[in-house]
Length: 138
Image 1: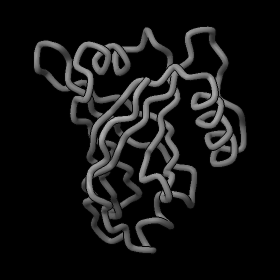
Image 2: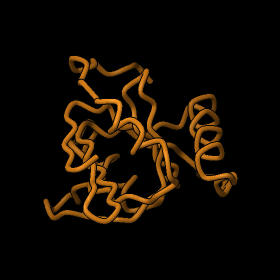
Image 3: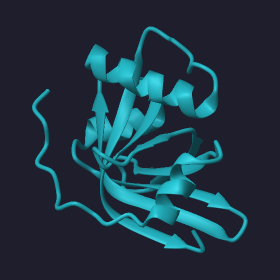
């Protein structure tokens, strides 16, 4: 799969980096269905500051993956909330099937959540190329 053009680097303050990589919280992940309505699902995710990518492990048959496969390069949002602190990562979501990138996503997930993700045969990783970061109290 060819790499997508990257947006300009976003500035992510250290406090936001810490919030995204610290406590193993879940986030609400929003994609758009083909009919234009939002699909929001709770997910575990990882944040890769160097690559400016958030990653979500899932299966190809999931609604979130099917939404992105139906509209490649679609905008997505991932919002992690802890009380009155929150960070939303906005960007472009891509379903990735490359075994090395899926394995990387699984390793990062296991490191953050202290357990490996499930290993179904149709496992994929959604990579979110972040181009906007919104936050409050983080």
